[in-house]
Length: 371
Image (cartoon, rainbow, N blue to C red):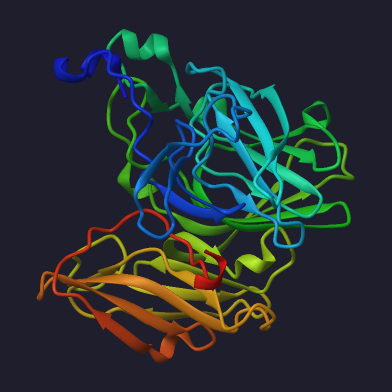
């Protein structure tokens, strides 16, 4: 990402993106996503490449790899950072209707240029977390890191009413922290609640001077942010829900942006033999505060669990969790299927492969009848 470090063999090369972060089915299209470019369309049956999809040339700038689909309206809500094509504070927000048409687009200036990997929605609001993993082209051209941890800038979280515009954005401020992935958010009256996997310090990226960060602070833990929109301050409450290291949070996506009870994640219980970042799959019950965990086994590692409801009208949480598990002793992968209502009981089924499937970032379930 640093032009000064680019290999001569790719200098000046134009690309349409790697599309290596997420995949989504919406509006009759299968789209592979990464946050610096437009979506890349695939044939849903053959998986043959079709090419970049810009919503009939209505998309300007990049699109997040983490769009949010409102189950009630069918809308897909999206954003982009560096929206003007360069590293800057400019951001975009846009809405794609249930038929796949881009029907709304706005731009706004964030408090500073930052990497904004994900965002949140509720029935009434859109939440943009601007966190001090800052971007600077000047810094990069001088030989420094393109993106670096700059905690003095603090956290700025913008909350916009869905029935308003970016002109109605209200900004809240907090102590430095970083979030790659939220679990969910919802609005009840004047209170907006966001559950996120929060780091004290952004992992994987250096400080402004190029020195490494503190690994002890680069540990994600489930945290709740609470915003009181009726207050006259720009503060918000941050509450640690669990000390368990966890990431890649998911939920029953039918409840995206709504009050919900159950969340799921990959977690680290500090096993004796560690062969990957996470060795457990967890379910948190926000009503009771109880967390249950399935340990994927000795010398095994797992990644993001994906929730699949038993049926479209099944109660929240009635369904299955799917996740890949790498077995170091076999150097191969299996798919684990858990009862989402009884995670600690272990698999209801496993599908063994004869080879290793490298861990990706994100995935989603799409019923065959939808294709």
